[in-house]
Amino acid sequence: MKHSMFQWLLILCMTVVLAVSQAAATRIDIPRLSPTRGVILEQPEILKTWSCEECQTFYYNQTLDHFNYRPESYTKFQQRYVMNFQYWGGPNAPILAYLGAESSIDSELAVVGFVNDTAPQLKALQVFIEHRYYGKSIPFGSIEEVMKNASTRGYFSSAQAIADYAQILLHIKKKLHAQHSPVIVTGGSYGGMLASWFRLKYPHITIGALASSAPILYFDNITLTPPGGYYSVVTKDFKEASETCYQTIRNSWSVIQHHDLDNLSQKFKTCKPLTSASELKYYLMSLYTSVAQYNHPPVYPVTVICDGIDGAANSSSGNEDDILLDKIFAGVVAYKVNETCYVNPPRNRTENGWRWQRCSEMVMPIGIGNDTMFPPSPFNLSSFENACKSIYGVPPRPHWITSYYGGHDIKFILQRFGSNIIFSNGLRDPYSSGGVLESISTSIVAVTTKNGSHCLDLHSALATDPPWLVEQRATEVKIIQQWLANYFADLRALIKH
Ligand SMILES: *[C@@H]1O[C@H](CO)[C@@H](O)[C@H](O)[C@H]1NC(C)=O
Ligand SMILES: *[C@@H]1O[C@H](CO)[C@@H](O)[C@H](O)[C@H]1NC(C)=O
Ligand SMILES: *[C@@H]1O[C@H](CO)[C@@H](O)[C@H](O)[C@H]1NC(C)=O
Ligand SMILES: *[C@@H]1O[C@H](CO)[C@@H](O)[C@H](O)[C@H]1NC(C)=O
Ligand SMILES: *[C@@H]1O[C@H](CO)[C@@H](O)[C@H](O)[C@H]1NC(C)=O
Ligand SMILES: *[C@@H]1O[C@H](CO)[C@@H](O)[C@H](O)[C@H]1NC(C)=O
Ligand SMILES: *[C@@H]1O[C@H](CO)[C@@H](O)[C@H](O)[C@H]1NC(C)=O
Ligand SMILES: *[C@@H]1O[C@H](CO)[C@@H](O)[C@H](O)[C@H]1NC(C)=O
Ligand SMILES: *[C@@H]1O[C@H](CO)[C@@H](O)[C@H](O)[C@H]1NC(C)=O
Ligand SMILES: *[C@@H]1O[C@H](CO)[C@@H](O)[C@H](O)[C@H]1NC(C)=O
Ligand SMILES: *[C@@H]1O[C@H](CO)[C@@H](O)[C@H](O)[C@H]1NC(C)=O
Image (tube, rainbow, N blue to C red):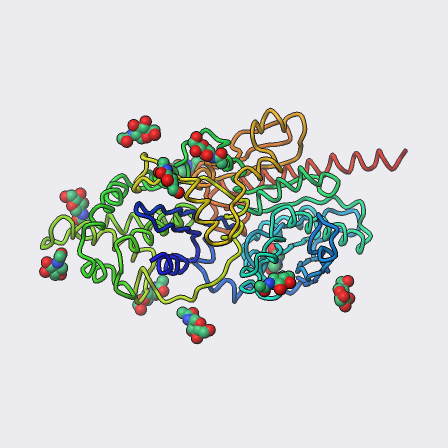
């Protein structure tokens, strides 16, 4: 039971799900953080068609363990990074470094156009660094092998990752004789958290960070938002798009739960017969959360789904439940056009390191409160811990992120310590409920957009971008330019003496 449940949940693959098979089965369903996924879901061809002739790929002999002096700590692995010199003003000109998140750097290069779009104005060297254990930067061979072995998994942590970034940035500056080049770091989602933490931990390497959609307050009960914060925002997004759509979805769960499985399979044109109503429910939940997270212009997928739901014909023959289910299915089809079948397509199980990261450090207590359009499902730390322990043999450390990077009383702490961080958030992004939404000081600033989605500002500028998005990016660039101006003024003063 547990096994098969894991299998199909992993088949959903974009969602990190931990299932515990108990009498009262608890499910912990956390939509994955990712700066790129929304674009890739809708335009999978982008990964094949995207190219960059100016980009050069390098590999750095990275140290396996930065925090230990045992012989095996000195093991090296090849860490990939990409540089684009096209707009660089040469030694002393800025370096704009994108800190990779939980995926291959290829996908991030294809989607994170902000760096290339901004580089000309700053005369910046573009650097994209891949996160250890993703893409081609995997110590000990394949990710499957690595994740099976408790010893090799142990070097997979955010602290090691930002130490990697520090090493590579220092290496680049040395190699290019660019010791005085100011480095700006940026990242989105988990990578945005890394960018903000990097600025706090390595102020001698970066002069400032743009942290896009970084839910650094979604740890250790920092925020007083109800544990359902994430799902409350998803609900708000649907309600704003259409009240009737919201109501239809809200009413659908009990109908699905009690409907005949064969009929459900037929209605939803599933690829394989459903084995439980939950299979369909999780699919729909994952779809709704994903489109809310990536509800970007000009598509606005929440609206696409709601138009599908609201626009479905009121078939006269069926009973109320049938009509409602037809509407839900029409919503699915409106978004997933032209698929031959739905809900449980054949997919190969792929290993992704994020599940380990969630189960070690990234313990975000995201549950479903009773104020959403979803069936309530509060976060249960002890069942989360048990689930992780049963997969990896070791329990998560839910307090480690706040011990190591802080987060509690962030305003009180950082207003007298930190500087030069932009926290950008789109308020339609469910993860914004764990973001820094108010400025902390004059140089640790929040930039929010009412209608923005997850990491939208980091995407390539498009002709269809609404004015508020154009303005958001311009604001961010202006702040970065001010950091640079201050840096160069300080540098000139230093050199004079
Ligand atoms: C970077 O921007 C330039 C100018 O806008 C464009 O010609 C080039 O194709 C872009 N490169 C990438 C890799 O997106
Ligand atoms: C990395 O290490 C390998 C093997 O030790 C060596 O051949 C290679 O030149 C090194 N690369 C760099 C960039 O130092
Ligand atoms: C796990 O990895 C370590 C370090 O590479 C290796 O020594 C050990 O043999 C591996 N264990 C298993 C069970 O493969
Ligand atoms: C957060 O608060 C809840 C309820 O008070 C508690 O059960 C849980 O252990 C706390 N989580 C952490 C990580 O401290
Ligand atoms: C299943 O659907 C068929 C027709 O589509 C209907 O006749 C039948 O009553 C349905 N069964 C249940 C249990 O809903
Ligand atoms: C379906 O019926 C509802 C309630 O009667 C109505 O508000 C809605 O406009 C109808 N939808 C269509 C597509 O006819
Ligand atoms: C879906 O299929 C129809 C008919 O085959 C085609 O005209 C349409 O362009 C397709 N839409 C998409 C988004 O692929
Ligand atoms: C799954 O992997 C097998 C073997 O690598 C391959 O033949 C098959 O096409 C894959 N299926 C899907 C749906 O990707
Ligand atoms: C929802 O949850 C809150 C806080 O846990 C509780 O006070 C309230 O009574 C609940 N409302 C409903 C309708 O269950
Ligand atoms: C949380 O899960 C544990 C089992 O891991 C269970 O004993 C406990 O009752 C659950 N707590 C709540 C509030 O559901
Ligand atoms: C946000 O979107 C809504 C429609 O969903 C629109 O009415 C509103 O004007 C937009 N707000 C801004 C600031 O663009």
